Image (cartoon, rainbow, N blue to C red; front, side, top):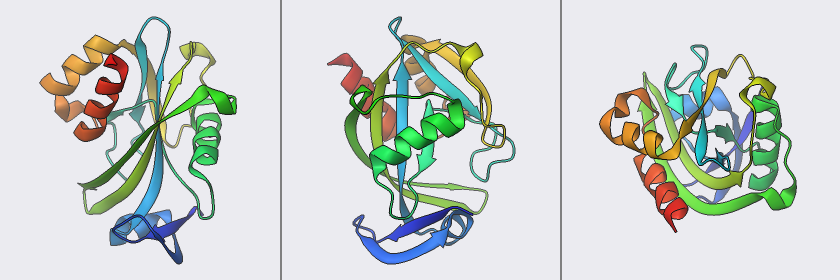
Amino acid sequence: MELLDVLDRNGIATGRTKEREEIHRDGDWHRAVHVWIVNNKNEVLIQKRSSEIDLFKNFWDISLAGHVRAGERSEDAAWRELNEELNIVVRNSELESIGMVKSWLEDKGNHDNQFCDIYFLRKDVELREIKKQGKEVAETALMPLHEFKKLIYEDPERFVPRMEEYEKMFDFLAS
């Protein structure tokens, strides 16, 4: 059971908590963390979502997308999710906050209304060292950033629809 804080439409905690499945069913606002991992060759780590997950089954996604649990800080959720989903351990100073995106997505009757805190991690990772969390992650890949950017625009149906976030990260990486 994963309890999440229910937020209002401005991102303020309401004092209520719900299970993840209820939040998605009811369309409640909640907080999430997204981490983009880019190595020194400018390849982005992407993951293919599992067929067992409730939203966007078998879609390609950013390096990491996870929920902030009730009472948890965003940074702590990012560290926890990196370790749980991908077996990647990072120091506090390695994660760089990029900002926040308000996102509302719908997939097969589930509503994912999130305030997404976005982080960047420059780290060389070996695919063979990643121990994917089977229930959530089906596959991981390293893709040259320019190729990833091209695919997002030319073949968006393969990816979780996060265009505002993709553009925010592309702008950050270009600066």
